[in-house]
Amino acid sequence: KQEVTQIPAALSVPEGENLVLNCSFTDSAIYNLQWFRQDPGKGLTSLLLIQSSQREQTSGRLNASLDKSSGRSTLYIAASQPGDSATYLCAVRPGLTGGGNKLTFGTGTQLKVEL
Amino acid sequence: DTGVSQDPRHKITKRGQNVTFRCDPISEHNRLYWYRQTLGQGPEFLTYFQNEAQLEKSRLLSDRFSAERPKGSFSTLEIQRTEQGDSAMYLCASSIRQGANYGYTFGSGTRLTVV
Figure 1 (tube, rainbow over the protein chains, first blue to last red):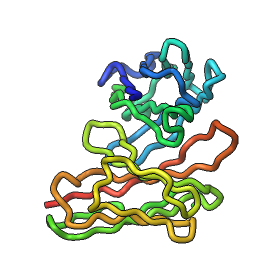
Figure 2: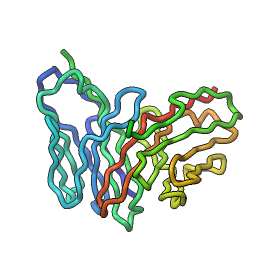
Figure 3: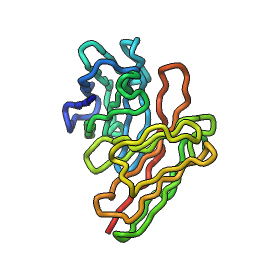
Figure 4: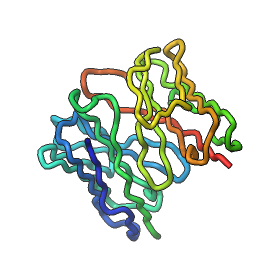
């Protein structure tokens, strides 16, 4: 059974700092990994999707990397802003042998960027 | 609005009552998913449809839960005889199959509180 872990569970940083969020998964047979942002009481907003054959994806100040063999992904946020405050979730989509149509999520990292 | 729409946004119900939620996916997406998220946890898979066919159900989906997607467009999730443990955020997502690697788009969710 796939298990996804996110470290740290919570993080508070001053504005302008660069930061890294970590995601690890136990079964490396995945199709892709997706990072989401969730504001309090809201749904999920997709940030980045990394295919299993890719090493990284970038969007603006966000960069996500994937090391499938070691079961790890990182989300790098450059020059953090108060508007980045949210919970960040990673989710893996397994390969066909693992039930390929459902995502397994981590419990998230709650980020607070302070002025 | 071309995103995933969910209705209602919030629902408060008394224990034992039935509730029904609706999800309208992105129009060209043929796959639709329901997830449940409790406080401090990542979303957990409930069920998914490809067009009108319900192809997979989680063990979390007890016999009090039923989901339909009658014409392959919108979907409904009904909970009968609600219990306090059903209180959660119910999230709908949709996707379109483009090879093996496709991302999910989530709606804003329906927050259910059972009192």
